[in-house]
Length: 262
Image 1 (tube, rainbow, N blue to C red):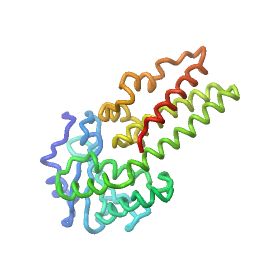
Image 2: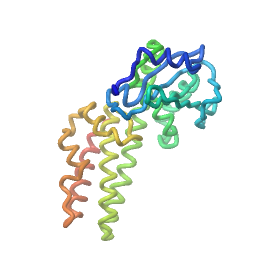
Image 3: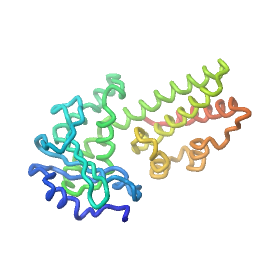
Image 4: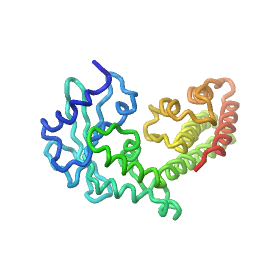
């Protein structure tokens, strides 16, 4: 089975299935397929942007703190492949952009309280989508997103997670709880790498399975892939001296933290 979708046939298939509303503004291929990371088991993730809310009995509705308050999601299987289609209204996308305004960022709003994971994923995927319909709509919304505080919110959130993980690691180490300290230091690595990538406009920390791919895509000058991969895989860890790895890892994380630009 080809790991890439038949993009030419997606829109027609949606229309034939009754899953393409007449007032659609855009149809987007998103996720791993859009980024060229798909494999033979990958789902096809699609987003349809509409003017009015889409209603179908085939949908399950994801609750969101927006107007309207749900995102209908339909799952179908086409030629042995699972398709997941989310229906966002243009108005909902506008509300998401309002949530990540510079005004809100400058007011000290905490990012974790701004967007749900499904909302953050929507914005992140907008930047990396393949538009099947609505190139102009995507271009405009991506410009608005690029001018927003989304990057600053995301990187700041990851840095806050880093601070917490480092404090945990050092406190646990002082208490003689080396096993927990190792896990906290391991968590710190994920947060600081996510912050570094987000500062370069490469988002997706909610899906750590793609962190290595994101790193290769962003190629930050502050850290080589080989150095990153040694941290990610705990290459220097010695089971006989776990505290050494914890201290060295915390030092690296603190150094990288200083090089993250918000």
